[in-house]
Length: 136
Image (tube, rainbow, N blue to C red; front, side, top):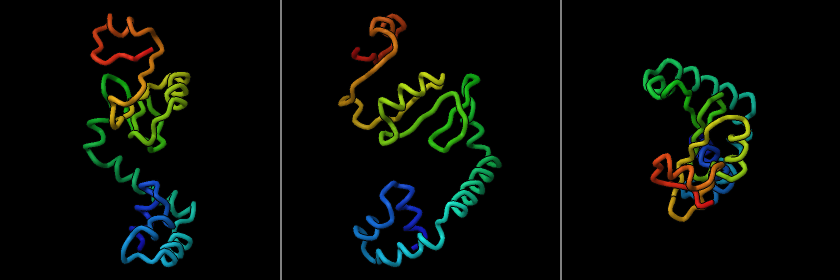
């Protein structure tokens, strides 16, 4: 049940919906587990422990810096390049990251179906040899 609560929050499904759509998971029991164990203080402490462990691992350090820029995902760390999956992408995030000087590198599903944006004209990107250019 505890892991179901983590999955519910981690996948942005929510524990109530996860309880409704899953076999062998009682929604009321899952709600009780989440209410008792998932306080803000407990979640913050767990997140701090995970980040502390990650600091001790070599693999994240290999990818932490690329060409002098820190690269991170949606974990709240300060960065020069921010990446996220399709669900973390929006035009607002794209614009705000540009305004604060952070490069935004979303990993977008169904890329061919997406509207491309840029802060320069399409010809600017083409002249630089970009294979994929914004529409406008």
